[in-house]
Amino acid sequence: MLTQREVLLIKISWSYLVALEQEIGILFYSTLFELEPRLRPMFGASIDAQAQKLMSTLTYVVSCVQNTENYERDLEELARKHDSYQTRPEHYELVGKALMITLREVLGDNWDDETELAWVKMYTFLSDKMIRAQQQFASSSTLIN
Ligand code: HEM
Image (cartoon, helix red, strand yellow):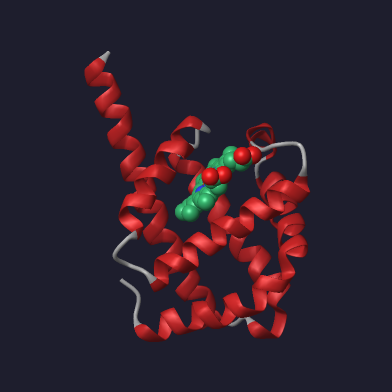
């Protein structure tokens, strides 16, 4: 899990991000669809609505940092949803990459290598858990069929 310092770095950068919802949303999705245009149809048409969803994603990530006991159950639910969106393991790397590019750009002087490492560690931890949970749904539905 994350060190206390990493948790602190994530919380500090989060406090700057809260006011920047639109900016982050637009930059994140344009970066993601530039990296992989085939992901565009997975998301709804309105980037405004997507920007809000991205913030709910980031809120979720930060809440996992703060509340490490309850997130496991939520994560399974989230993995189930992502299974229905047809999210594949290789997509997680692209989303992580687009996220870091966006945060670095938007936060400017409030972003540094140590903060980036903390976010990467958190994102990798969550995506590993989600990928594993999705694989379990896939293998249990194969057993049922
Ligand atoms: C650790 C990684 C991720 C986290 C924590 C996360 C979290 C979330 C959350 C909280 C939502 C909103 C769910 C709701 O509306 O109830 C969401 C929606 C969504 N996510 Fe993720 N996500 C992650 C990775 C990904 C990846 C890799 C993809 C694939 C490209 C993806 C695609 C989507 C899509 C398509 C939606 C629904 C958007 C819509 O309703 O239009 N997510 N995600």
